[in-house]
Image (tube, rainbow, N blue to C red; front, side, top):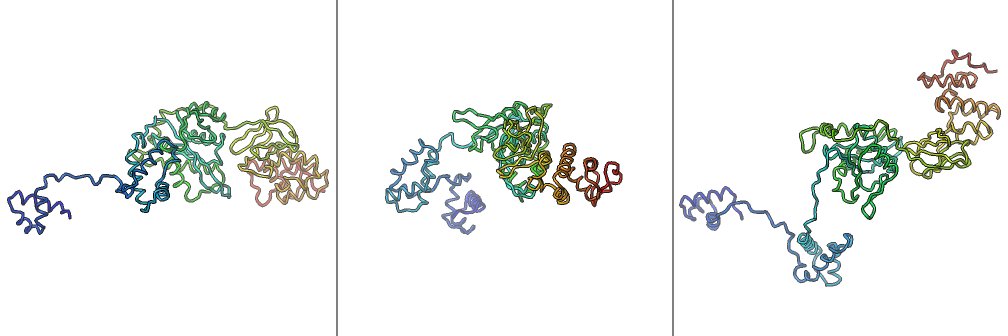
Length: 486
């Protein structure tokens, strides 16, 4: 048993004073063997705690000559074809009649690998240039507009200052990657000189020959802002460890509990605000707030160009006989007027913009992610054809877009009167928007007035100006635009 340091010190002191070992033993209450050991011990310097090697294994007692060649041969094979400790144990049992425990094999494999570790194994701490960024995507669940959705969030990290920014997006296509980076660039007011990616779907991928292929939209985005992209091995996280850490940080801190927002845009604003708040804390290695380090880092970044980049993927599409175009397996209405025509369609993250042959915007329906069997209908685009064919009103796809009060009016009209009403609604909706026009029709009906184009238009403009419509509206001041019901 090892004696305490204070006992060793007293033994050495008493020995130097000339006391015999027997007297020291009696005085300190320890054995003479202990006195002899520490009185003659010349060096009390600390010693290493252990060798650091795995303990001995029973494989050494007769099997090492057989087994030694197996992991040695693995060095010439792909990593996924290397022997594991389990596989070595199974082979020993099947081929050599090995009867000792698996733990012995595991200790032997551990010691062998430590002994044959190459000088190039391990990791090197990287130093990133000031103003460079790392980008990676994470996945999280969130409630968007009351529906649980999978959110793909790009995390953008600046290693020098350790600031992180996170954006909520519905996926990882080119337009979404560009939109996410644009949100971060506009929040910071600057763009990095270099952005490091792995094989992000919307950015590009590394070819087998080491070259990187980039998508067209991302190439334009990069040229617009002037930064240089680099690509790292997606399976080697240490090559961009700052952003890998940022993805984990965002998942643990911004997304627990599951976030909820009315839209992806709202969730993005919340997350960017929270990232800005977190940046107010001190850097992990410096007693300076992260945001101050980032402000200094901006001196080495690129200013944003004067024109804002539009992350829109333009495609040539052909409308079907109903005037709908198909984009990513989903149908969007351009309108019956454009049936069977070749159109240009701009695919943005949150909207689709079909344009006519002359470049005029036809409509901008909301973009649907995933596959939907239902055509994403813009009610205003179908008003003209239904007004021309009023008898299809009952089966029209936009009938349920009208509130019950408004829907009941054309339901009880004859074909000619219904056609006139729908044409009036179409004309006003072209100027005031479909939502305000429908609300105006409902207001006029509730006021007991005749529903015509002048009444609808006047009321719709009032709604757009912010006038309240709760509980019905007094339309007497608009009598000059209306006729009394007969």
